[in-house]
Picture 1 (spheres, rainbow, N blue to C red):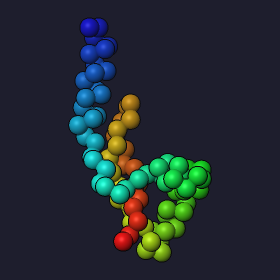
Picture 2: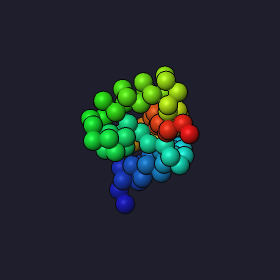
Picture 3: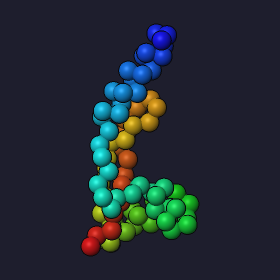
Picture 4: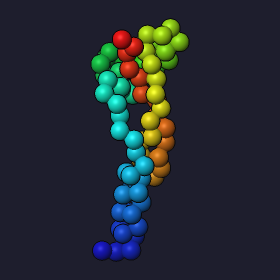
Length: 79
């Protein structure tokens, strides 16, 4: 294994450990966009509007991509 490959593996594994699980019923804007057959931007705007009206709730969850861990907004219907 090359040194660069080892470093990439270490970075990947450490980022994965920082991720938080997504609670049941929550989806990000892309998930809602697919469910509603809308663009991700439109779905995000609608989700934010629904949070204002109390129809949905939002939770920010740490998610890892290839280089960093970021907080991503996830939305769920208020029952």
